[in-house]
Length: 174
Image 1 (cartoon, rainbow, N blue to C red):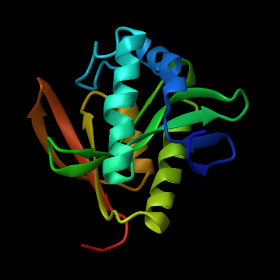
Image 2 (image 1 turned 45 degrees about the vertical axis):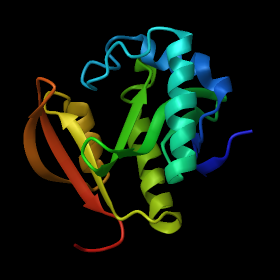
Image 3 (image 1 turned 120 degrees about the vertical axis):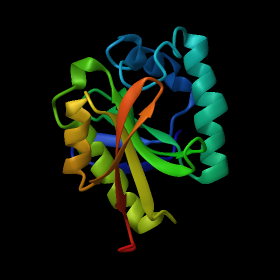
Image 4 (image 1 turned 135 degrees about the vertical axis):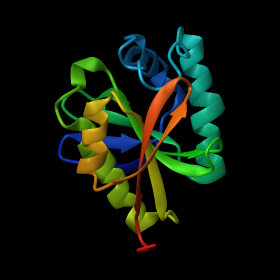
């Protein structure tokens, strides 16, 4: 049984486990999902999905107390994507992110899930500053970050993309 982090009226947000291999493969299978993520093609098989769960997320839960969390649709008890935080060593910041299977796009799940994560972090985590990096052409994700209350910080080039960084303080006023 995976640790439940938080819930919303429609969603359960919990830690991933190795029973989620098929779901992780499924929500990464459509090439549109990873179009702007910089890690397109990383999940090409069930073995790739298992490796991400085992070697990244499960390790990060132990190391940091958090990593990307599974988003479970209560109505079907199906994992439809991920949300939450990642300690991103490449930028030395904590990143908020999400990924959902395309059939769940445009229904408010990214905003709902990540708002629940922010609310959880404010009360239960030793986390203050978070960033959200998004490719400037990904208008839907920019809108999600704005709805979460994040503010534009800067633009920069990375992996051939123009990135917009949004940020927010969860506890301090900086």
